[in-house]
Image (cartoon, rainbow, N blue to C red; front, top):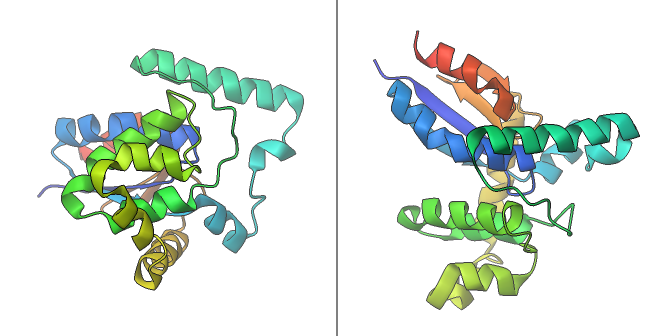
Amino acid sequence: MAHTLEIYWDFSSPFAYLGATQARALAERTGATLVWRPMLLGGLFKSIGQETVPINTWSDAKRRYYFDDMNRWAEFWGVPLKFPAVFPVNSIKAMRAYLALPEDRRDGYREAVFKAYWAEGKDIGDEAVLAEILGGDAPAVLARTQDPAVKQALIDATKRAEEQGVFGAPTWVVDGTELYWGQDRIPLVERALRR
């Protein structure tokens, strides 16, 4: 029986970006069914009583390590990483646009937004940046980000993450029960998927 691998993510997290670059290959290597679980990380943090920008609470030494670690992982996986000038970013519109898209366009959009923010340093809180990524139907998709059903879908997705025990991004959940936090947990996730 194939395993299910869920990944909880938000565009605002550099480690979610790094994990997302590896998720598909991980699922393919292990035969797992990959399920992308968007959430609003800031909303989750608020709900669970976490500082909304944890990096702001860290010591200088921990902050330096955080940046070094991000760059090490990017180099290890051979993926581009350029820490954006606008950080933290308000990702709510970008996340709602993901949910406003038809299923068959979500993968491409997700990859393009992650790349725009974490590889190119573009401000994904800017509608013009999102419109460039979305292309011709950008006005319609961006208008749908104000639709109460789309707003509720993101609220519900974030609540689902909280109920699952998620507290950061990326969070991997194997078969709905085993939770792993961070892109650096991929070896443990892979081991679980190979059982």
